Length: 265
Ligand SMILES: [Zn+2]
Image (cartoon, rainbow, N blue to C red):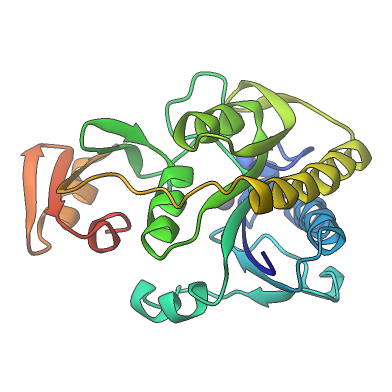
């Protein structure tokens, strides 16, 4: 285990509790929130280095950007920019790494106490279900990377995001940096303590992976992805894509045998 791909987000970091003030790019504390996220990511890099990992790529997964570039740990490289390149082009990059970890993750849309809970687009998507099972961003990453042979072995975020990951991936290591009390409120660890725990736990996660490896997450196909939107116009646009079936005014379904071809559509 020498190479790790880090997927980052902003909403699941300690101290970042508000979409409006911190996670949206027009928020008054957006820049401060990015600094918190960057420090958590750097703590993860430190832990990985202590565990002997040599190649570390950080993918800034927050839509508007969640990493302060000039504060990035010198041992890591950053994959950033929107729009994202096509997944088919990213695959060549992802395959260079042996495992994936997630920092700053939030719970799926609809999670009662999940701080800033959402799935992909907080203003558009009500829920995603894969073969009848509700899924969030953690499952999307675990399944996509799983299809490329990378196991998800560590996640930090709020307590609901950690529970979601544990239900998804047996044996995954997690660090809850805050306990959500509602979509807009949480009890956060101090920034210093959150970083200390991430650094220590991710190191253990790598060491465990070497002894008793978690396999890549693969669910048996064929797949039916159901997407429900908040508004009918968004469902109209989705339903106009080829191969998309309209279920009702706000819901569409996609079918496929290759998880990579439907999980992010
Ligand atoms: Zn985000």
